[in-house]
Length: 488
Image (cartoon, rainbow, N blue to C red):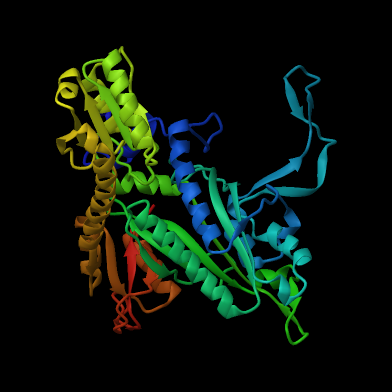
């Protein structure tokens, strides 16, 4: 089956699509622009969701749920916000169908027009801040630290499974604070949570930075981002955290009585990651034979394959081995299909990205050992059955670290400082990756660079070199180098 996958070098986009479809992560839907997440893909999302949810709760946040529908008038209250989302909004105008009197099935009932149109949630700032007005009265109600797991709709027609679809799953945090300092600290804290999750769980190295004014979230004072690099040299915005200042509080009149007994507008943040992370995971690690999942997130961490087929003795032995590993929290599958040859099974589990494969045959059992193969390096070795409970957790941890180090080495080798536009274009065309270049800070220059190179300003790195220089395009003074890249 693996041979049916287009190679990365031949057509990277088709390679990605092949993996998603053939590994049964997702399918295109009958609804144009939308996807169906299949059980294996949803199991991966559940693992991501559960770990992120724990990290959110460990930092003091709680979950709530807000309506899918937003009154159109709410979207008009924050000018920059609506300008940023207006072209992506799905609008509900009617609430009822009826039979077509001409026999053409059902039609929209023209008498069922809504008094006010509803927007299908593209993001929830407006509906949430309208609600917070009733929840927040004094400084004792702050901080308000709420997260929502939900779906959102942004009307995309040029779609790619997981990376860009009209509907997708995500989480969105929305918090309210008494001071700007607290809100900024919250924004930075959640950026750190995202970076920790990306690196420690996804084994995907990221660069933390601040978006330029031109790239920041609509309605935000500052947008912080984690930027990752895919194997084709393109950047992926993997998560964002926004400091909203008092913009939404003023738009929705959310005030509180401070400790000095004075009315004051609250300070806000919002932050989110989505199922786009699955696309990032695939493109960071996978190869021409299939997916490669980091063990911490893999739906199946260890698969047992009987050689050449199941027998009563093999079933009993694998049952005992599985029981011991499950007790350690290892996610196990036993591929007991009797109609499929071992070689085909091996290829299938490589395609699915299972980190460890254990082959078990009669001769192995006679010698009290099994063959253990790792997906990332393809290394195989025999392990004594009584040693599995020690060796498998160690091997899973080593695979996790090896995958991160490999991705980080690739990323670091593809961060290139340049001083001229000729160098800028040459790096993008011949090498790819992140370009570190001086920029004069103007929107005009940023847009001109994008027009000339198709590269966008990814972020101003938080830990970047602060040495001043001259803009690569205009020669005007520049405070520091920033990251540019072609991107998803």
